[in-house]
Length: 303
Image (tube, rainbow, N blue to C red; front, side):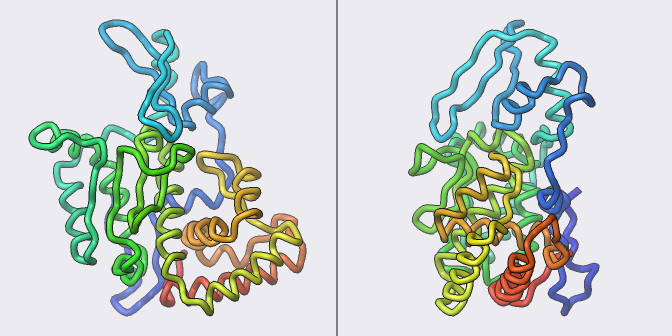
């Protein structure tokens, strides 16, 4: 399901292809309203934002973790909503995919680069092992995504730990980069697959940004100002809408760097052909951004 794709380009090639879950971030998020029975825009918005419907002792509840915190809120629901949620989850969500080897495979990849894996909400012992199996899809997907990054990004001394689950230092986010650790909160694990991979690469972007050479920071800061001035920032849709992600980058240069890391991997070479009514100054700036990000990525490009 998540085979290593680098081999198809030849041993010496630096041309790579991210898993489809990453590449689809370059397109607008298609709605499933009208395709899934009884799904409303309001329900879809809640499901994308990490809410779900569960059945406990014959009763149905809708809710989930609150953003950025370990508390949860649930309200009464019904079987129809449960069936709608399960249908949505089968397309856009994170499936229940058991993989007893997924955790070990990811841990081995990270260990090879001097990093570690942690699961902030996993108990130890037998129950922890069972939870690791239940998160098999996430571990397999994460391993495939990280395996397509330049080795030096995993060797990065500013990236020493990946935590999938639990919580982090900032109660206002669904993920964080803190103390050389990339942290994906429980809140993001229960939502859309698209959001999980978006947050993973965004936070890896922060780790890369923390060790970025001054020459690249200086060039990209100048390009950030140019893109912000002419309204040519790119906002991908995951967790938040595209306009919100543009606004976030407009204000904070470091967020632009982290988001550009994701954009580079999701679009790949297609970024050079991006038009979308963008002003000429914006298109030229993005060409320069691409050249600089290619250097940051040690010559790696994506198709």
